[in-house]
Image 1: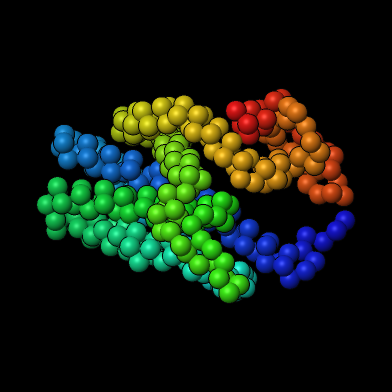
Image 2 (image 1 turned 90 degrees about the vertical axis):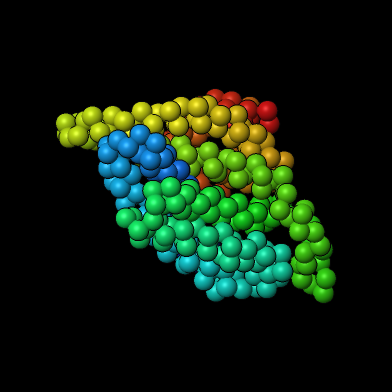
Length: 301
């Protein structure tokens, strides 16, 4: 069996992949749980029903914990850009660094500031201003996601740049910000976050149902979660399919690698669960559960 990482580059890839996967466990939950908490507080503001206030405080605590962990893991990623991939960062810094700088100086500052206002504004601000602070913080999280995905999408589908003296230089801010790949990725990510956030809320509610603890209270939260999850999931089926087509167009090798497709196939199945088959030395999986034709549908239709 070959070692997991035998070179410095392999070690850098392993470290960055581990950080990114761990980080992205928290990012979509922040994107989805924030607006749901804001909906709870909006319902409390409109109805004066104390049950919505209890739900706001309960799920708001989960939101804040998740936000803090997401920020911490994201900072580790920033260090790895400069330490693991310093040559690459120097080569694309004028382009890649621009949206990341805007994210940190504008979007993240917006969400962090107003989230702080929301945390410490209970009983200090009017209910309307306090609610507005939360919605602005949620807007900030969505703006952060946009600028980060602009940077990421430029790596997948580079636009608005030219090579000068061996370095990439930005030639069009508009081309960078309106990258079609980025727009599709952004919509796909926001919908995924809403699905994730609503299902986490629903899961917490179901846990309380099983324990027969505050059933009436969490029934209200479950209703909101389902109202969000059902239509968003149906929309994501369409958006995700279109995004798969965009990934295939820009980087067909990536979508094949993501499914460990070592040989050309038509139609190709979509893997639900697989053990083995992830390297050229071991192309045949020990166990694989697949759905026939679905990968080809996602990638081409």
